[in-house]
Length: 299
Image 1 (cartoon, rainbow, N blue to C red):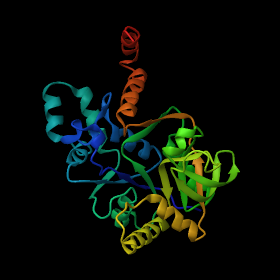
Image 2: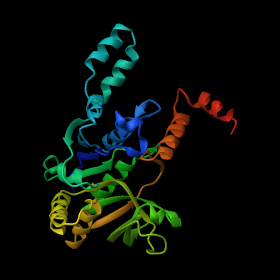
Image 3: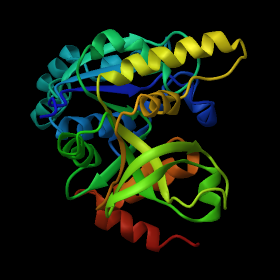
Image 4: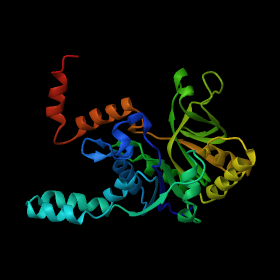
C-alpha cells in the first residue's frame, strides 16, 4: 500500500517579471483574484487532498507570503475593536490551513530546484509538487485529490498531472508525456518531451502541475544536479530530468488526465485577467452585479 501523501512543495521563487512594475514590491503569487491571493487558491487545493505540511520555496522578495499564512494578531485586534467579527474567523483560518514551512531558494535556476532545496523537508515521504501561480476550480474532486487518489491506486513513483491538448500551438507551449494508455485518461509513461512542436509526437497528454512524486524523486533530482554540474554548460534544472532518471531506473511513471474543472494559469497577464473575471462571476456576493456590469460594457 502506498504511503499517504501528507506533504507538499510549492514553487514560489520566481521574479514575476511579466507583471512588472506591479511585482516590483509585491510577489506575483500575492496578486489578488477577487478577494484571495493566487497562492491561497493553490494552498486550499493542496489541503483538500489531505496534506498537513506545506513547504513554500521562496526568495528574498517573498516575505509577504509568509506573513499571509501567519496569525495576524494586530489585524485581529483591530477587527475586534471595529466590531467586524465576521472577518476574524476568516483571516484566522488561513493560518490554520496547514503547518507551513519556508525555504529560500538557492542553487541552479530551474523548475526542479525547489525539490532539491526541499529534500530535507521531504525526507522519505511522497509529496505533491505545484507551481504557485496556477490553480484549478471545480465543484467536484480537486486536481490534487484526483492525483493523490491515482498515486494511492496505481503504484507509480510519479503521477503527472495532465490535460488533453492537441492543437498545433499547444505542442509549442507544454511538455508532453508519451507512452501506453492503461485505461481512459491514464498513460504509463515511457518518456517525456519538452515543447516538442506540432507533428513530432502522437501523444496528446500535455503536462500540468500538480505532480505527485514518491520519495525516490529526491535522489533522482540529486542525480540530475550532479549531471548538471558535470555538464559545465550553463542551463536550467528541469523537473523532467528527474522524471527521466526515474524512467532510466525502470520506475513506473503515469500521466493522469485531470477532469471536471477549469484550469487557471495566472503566470501571464491574460491568464490572470481571465481568472479574475471568471472567479468574480462565480463569487456569491458579486456574480449578479458583476455580470450586469459586463453586459453593459461597450465591447
